Amino acid sequence: MKKLLLQLLIAVSFVTPFINNSEAQEITGVYGKVALGADYLDGYDFKSANQNNSYIDAKTDFDIGSVGVLAAGYRFKESFALELEYAQRTHGINSVEVTNGDLLSTGDMKAKSIMVNAIYYLTSFEYVNPYAGIGFGFLGDTEQQVEIAGFGSSHKSNSDAFALQLMLGLEVPITREFRFFTETRAFTASSPDVSNSTSTYNVAYDTASVMAGLVYIFPKE
Image 1 (tube, one colour):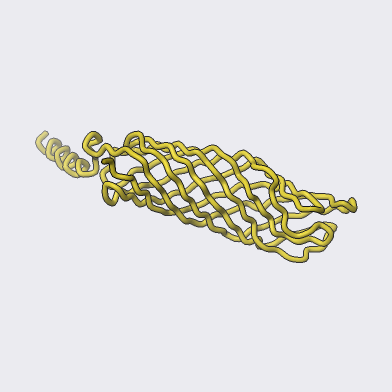
Image 2 (tube, rainbow, N blue to C red):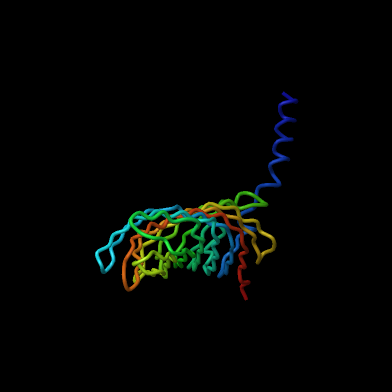
């Protein structure tokens, strides 16, 4: 019995430093966020007809790209936040397989998004705060730089597409104001159209990313 009690005391003494006092650590307020990361864009097929009634069927493959994020939000309590996010993604086009057409050149796939995110943090640990989030918004300024004979080169979106993202991450408090975080997320948009003066493509936009960044929580007066 004494041995069991001793083992329990040792276990409690080991776990206790990793448990926070939630009332003492409660932090709320306006914050800003910046992050950079690597982004994977899934390849997709697209079909199109031009003004001369010529048809193409093509398949794209992309290099690993980059994503940059800026966000501002409010931490209502230590465990919950809402934020407005701007993100920009760029991917080099690795290859394009074209049926019934001649590929002349390739460039990048670019897109921007505006999202509203809700994030929930687990704050029972002293050194890290695991979190999960969901975001809704729009994908816009989509541009596909593929030149195919008779179909023009750069194709751009004329309207926004509905977008959804899911996030999982770890936040590490550095000081009361600064927090480092690392995150993985999945992002999808509802097949935006991109066009130029000669043709229109319907493209899929599904990405997965890994990123790291900093959060600054503005001190209260």
